[in-house]
Length: 224
Image (cartoon, rainbow, N blue to C red):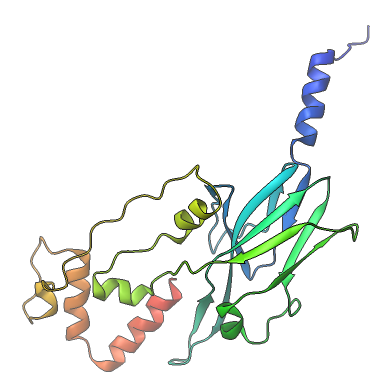
């Protein structure tokens, strides 16, 4: 006896198959930050190159980032742009491809990161309705965050807010008052067991010679 798939189950399968009608592809030099108010999880070791999109209008926060030769050492470091918001109208089962306006390879990454321009193409060469808006969301440098006591900017959360209202950024700890510098930064006394990580880093930075500081800078930049 043949088993017949119930009509309801068939409709569910068809519905799930059409739920994600399109894909947006980005190259390694770009990264997703947020989609419609939700952070997109990715990392340097797990680059997310494809984003599934349902029919309708989507706001996607994307950032350009590329590894370049460091000007102050023999190591390499990352250059990153502020996020830009791509507003895309999806009206069919298409494959969309994003790339830099200059082509597949950006010749001057540092200059490009100041004002990243992109183009979007579709697998069937059809017309695409999209807009790109630049933002001024800034991410403080790793070292300046460690030694200035400034608040950390959560770029992904801020980008999520810029693309919707579903996500609220997690509050960051209050910065230390400017007129009350951390004690370990102004003395040669080793910090005690209750010292914060910032105090420990400041203390050892002041104790290090120029060679050690440069080596630490190279390592710190590589962790970004």
